[in-house]
Image 1: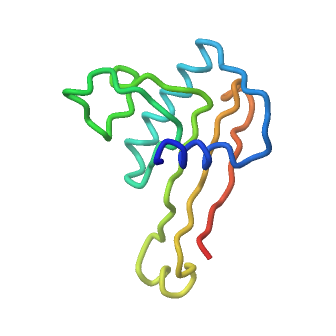
Image 2: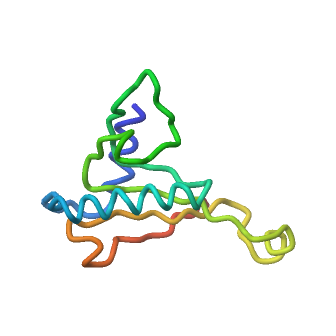
Length: 119
């Protein structure tokens, strides 16, 4: 069920023919996912991966040495206010997430970005 839900979240944009990135683009995308996962504690990968060593797997390790990635790469980052005052005065009461999907030619073309807000 979880994998189905992740696929559904990843492909909620209009259906397109899926093409895979070449080796250089794929490596750049994986490197960026790893860097973002280290910067943002609320990072959550939505696209499928295969753990290379399930017995010694770290669920928070998004490096290529740990995982084999399926494309397109999709992820979400939960956005949070910088401080409590901002949360009380300006921030909506429900969560907001940045949803990102990489097209095959990323980083030579822009990612597909959307904001998701619980109502």
